[in-house]
Length: 231
Image 1 (tube, rainbow, N blue to C red):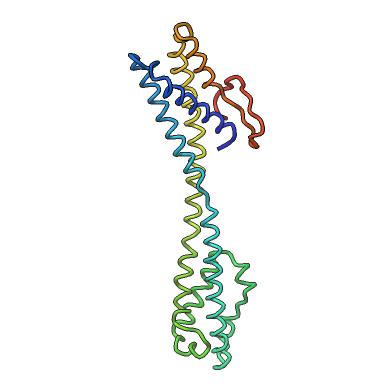
Image 2 (cartoon, helix red, strand yellow):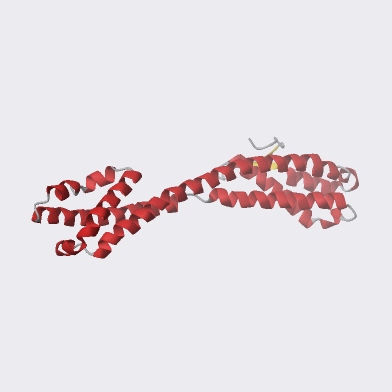
């Protein structure tokens, strides 16, 4: 959420708190009670969206990096074994196909890295018994398949998290604007009679309705006029 959106949400929460602390104002006023309940629902929805927005892809991105590292280690071990077997059997095709370096793997895009892993897997699978001599086990070969699948699954997961966060960001803005308009057009209007009958309570309501503009550093806090919807 932007700082302006946070300030606006804090104001809405203050209004909710005001009515929680002054339940007598709602007595025999079902329309006002319904409006307050609606405001509480709006605020709860915005807070839920805030949680969705706060989720980011950092953890999944870090896990993807670890998965890539594991995949590359498995590939280098298997490719080294294939190279050694190719040299021992004078198989030029195997030596050329396994001519892969750590540097080249690091430079590969994700899709190309997966292709390279599958190539190593397909080359190694029929040579499993021979590769044991070169310290490559069946588990090492199987790791190419499992690690490449795990690595491949990370991109959609990261994209989905980013997409949900982006949607939550847009929804927060829309919901805040709707809630502000509702508060201004409904609650403010229904509270107006209290300006005459209960001026103290009305003054407290006005204080709750102020949007306090707090800077991102929280170093300053000053009341200002209700400036409108979140932009």
